[in-house]
Length: 342
Image 1: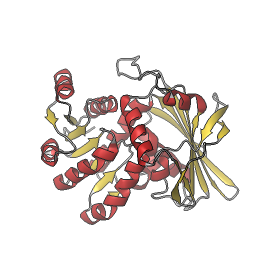
Image 2: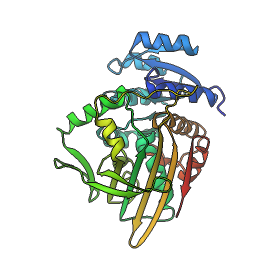
Image 3: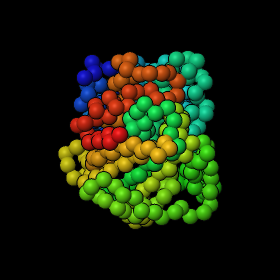
């Protein structure tokens, strides 16, 4: 349990931001609400009783005010192509750790490319993609690797009972698509590559009770940035079950609807990670509920570990690099179930 340390949440009034604010409060932190939408910010402040500080990614002085006195900042405001760099710069000026929940492939790649050397030199901690997409897969793959120092390939397969995307998810997808000119991205031969062909449709055998399902192969998520940032795996592939992929592509699919007091939807998920080396295979599986809600304990646990010195490096680092992956996953047991199958 935290001891009343202040953590600024940029984009606090967004769908994921609200989960993060609630999780911070539950863990004993004091959230400071930040964002550019004055009306939504004030409404959340009145609802939650927390301090609100209006700030915009385009106004460095406002970001400095938003982070003043904070022990850390969690950036929940997409598109991260626009917000990540300005909020990281503000965190570096303030001398505090930065964590974000970015799922955008290009935004995460930019964070590693633009800030790694500087953050390492300054002893700063920057953890991008500390979320369901990117962070969780990286933790699972790192735990599955165990004592392996290299592997030939890593596969991260997602199965969602449904995918009702938030407005932020749709906006991030549009921004990423525009940045790569409509191409799709894959990770092959140790680097990101861009293609214009259609992704393959495959079969994936998930653990019981899901079993064999149709998946969209090369449905590429942030894992293609986080895993190769520290794991010696030249090929990283991600997959999404076809029904969920269709949900997120359909413009008429509604936003997630809360079905409990915590605001979670009834969506369930399975993340099935397989790493292969030669003729050997290792696997890690996570199951849980609501991909947006489960992002909150991922991000807040990261902040807690950073502030209590339970880290392995400084600079820009993905979850599996900076944290003890098996221990971190065990800490998430109130929120998801993990099976490391070796």
